[in-house]
Length: 212
Ligand code: PRP
Ligand code: MG
Image (cartoon, rainbow, N blue to C red; front, side, top):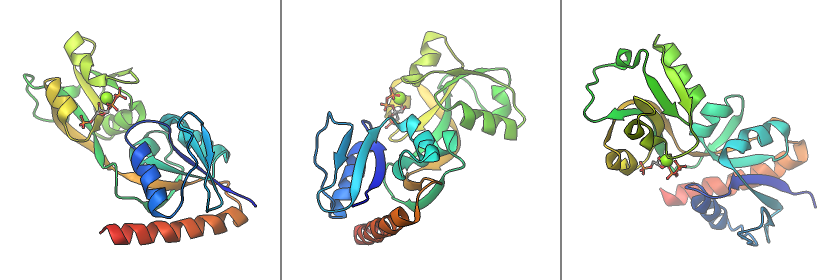
């Protein structure tokens, strides 16, 4: 039987809650943590564990049919990808932050400054909207350390509890977007797989309702 291919985050903050929502939908996955691919036992679903940042392209190419992914990633790399369900977990914001000691009144204060981020498109979009020019430095992780080592004047990254900002003596100065986990769909999904997706969505909606 044909199976719906779903991408979920391989490791990181979405992984556990993504598996939990599938489980709550009555779908158990044969794990295999080290396996990058696993089959569901009681639903026509195949799970692919992928790197967050790769998922928008896999959706675009139709390599996977659906994905559980953060809106922050879609905003950065997949604005063309359709969202079919908001999942209510992994809530966070993408924010600009700078050293606590630095004065900040408004976005114009970032003019000509160096900003370290893993979200260059999101930042560029925000700066452009506000008519500010800044110098973007792309780093893939541990972004919050950048100001402390003299690499940048400000950073833009995900803020969830705020503890990483706090530990690095940074203050949140602008919220660029608010994000949560969503179910995103490939533009190349076939009609027969869409029928399976509808069954999955029905279960997801029931689970979300029960969680309220
Ligand atoms: C993420 C993100 C922030 C932090 C936010 O980093 O990049 O640094 O979590 O969460 P908080 O507000 O609850 O502290 P992660 O720990 O996943 O590591 P990485 O940046 O190296 O990918
Ligand atoms: Mg981090």
